[in-house]
Length: 310
Image (cartoon, rainbow, N blue to C red; front, top):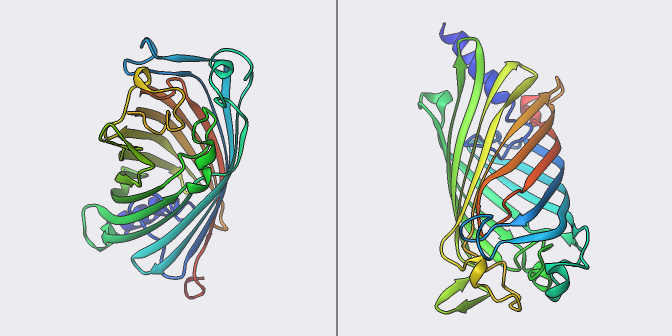
């Protein structure tokens, strides 16, 4: 019975290898994971402090759309720690930038393209369920660099907020089985200190933020995992849409943002350690943030074990 439970546990964990980076699990020493992805995002309603009905809420003249190409490389630096680097190229535009808020505010809706914020992470596993712990737990640090996006941060079509963020996170998760169905689930909380662009009325711009995210996936077969995912983002302070100065280049980075999104994910894994990932995410709650944001993602993950484990 114990060997069967261990086999089910490993079956649930194996789906995380090609995607790495997610949850408390880490790659083995000298293991590598490479992920290539594409994303599409769309919205046209900017909510105010009280949602879509706020006096300051803005309806764009046509939809904002953004397309991203992402590359993530993860490397196991120790048996219990990994390093991850992420870079992406993005293109963002508003369909009709000649009317409405786009025409009345200088440089609000110009097409923006180029390198999006670059992120690096290091994660260390503290507890491991394969060694008797009821859950796996990891902690880590993050640097998100976006200074090169500073000149376009005032746009609705901005692809970065123009400064560097320093983050610390903790993540916990468990992989196991309910009956004969393997599963994996994890939850992560992160605090980001955002290096200030300036101070306004005693408040740092941009404000710091807290992000909580997680997912729960079931594995009906060794090659398939699917389930739900969510993301919560909350700024610590900031201004409401109704209070911002539309002539201020930091008009969007200064906002007091709340955003809650939910969605689903499907992973398809081949016998040669290649995983195709499909995901969708949509906003269900937003303050001072897009209220109808919807995004789709498609990715390809390749897991490469070290030579000693091949």
